[in-house]
Image (cartoon, protein in one colour):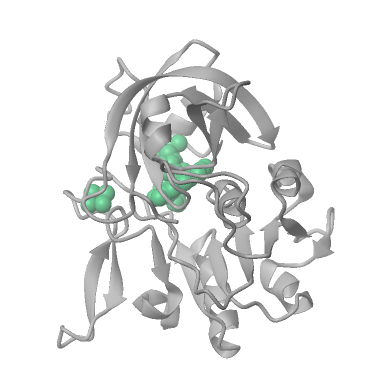
Amino acid sequence: MAANCSSPRPCVHQAATVLANDQLAERTWRLRLQCPEVAALAQPGQFFMVRLPGRTDPLLGRPFALYDTVLDAGGALIGLEIVHLVVGKVTTLLSGLKPGDPVEIWGPLGTCFPEVPAHVKRVTLVAGGIGQTPFLAYTRELLGRRGFGGAAPHKVVDKVELVYGARRQSLLAGLDAFVEAGAIELPCTEDGSLGLKGRVTDGLDTCDKPEWIVACGPDPMLHAVARWARERSVPCHVSLETPMACGLGICFSCVVKVASGEQASGWDYQRVCIEGPTFDAASLVELNQ
Ligand SMILES: Cc1cc2nc3c(=O)[nH]c(=O)nc-3n(C[C@H](O)[C@H](O)[C@H](O)COP(=O)(O)OP(=O)(O)OC[C@H]3O[C@@H](n4cnc5c(N)ncnc54)[C@H](O)[C@@H]3O)c2cc1C
Ligand code: FES
């Protein structure tokens, strides 16, 4: 399944062109980029650095997960999509882009999602806030609907559930796309405006016991999901969205403490941009305190 996820992983830098930029939800935009070389390498779980060319402010790129790959009418791979929440300088600028505008992109970066053990037939994806973005391509991959990174489509599991929480309905983005990709959705909103009223852990309480969880979202949510999984002995991986400067393993701005038998302290630093962004929740020191 993971065609190019071994090390060293290929990464290309490309001048991309905006094909479309659509608002999906409150402060949430889907940017479709023409960049066939980067898209050809991308696998679910990986991310890209994106920056606006010809500007020194902001100078650095920003990391965004692979949301989906883009095929033309004949099925040829022509680009990829990212979905982002407007929070600051780059995301505000990205939300104003028009078709034909240039964007710099380099990647794919980081590891793809870990291999699902053969006995697992149902994967439960848990997303909070903008944390659903790595999961659309992953749903397609797990259900064998699309191949990534040059691999042919290959069905990995029978069922993908998406437990997707936000404060209110207007912040939930891409629900139709997940249904079209084959996911069984359980939206949860804190104000009850759509789906279950409550948080994603309340949603998990209503599911059959998960076999394998992958979660992405804000740190307090990841803490809660990791605890929920630990208490029920369910394997759980988390995809981190730690702020990053280089994305290439050089600056160490993205490190997290990971359990290590080789250190007297019992842990060592790992870079989210190289060893991550997905980690076994049981190995992350701060998720287990
Ligand atoms: C591997 C990875 C994948 C990501 N995928 C996505 C994605 O698919 N969609 C998406 O919307 N976002 C994603 N993010 C987060 C995204 O990179 C940040 O939201 C983005 O860098 C903000 O840039 P900005 O210039 O708009 O904000 P800035 O002007 O740089 O910052 C604005 C505010 O947001 C805070 N902030 C910046 N980055 C983060 C962060 N990572 N976590 C929490 N607070 C932050 C800053 O501290 C500041 O308060 C991902 C992050 C990582 C590491
Ligand atoms: S962002 Fe520079 S080492 Fe990870």
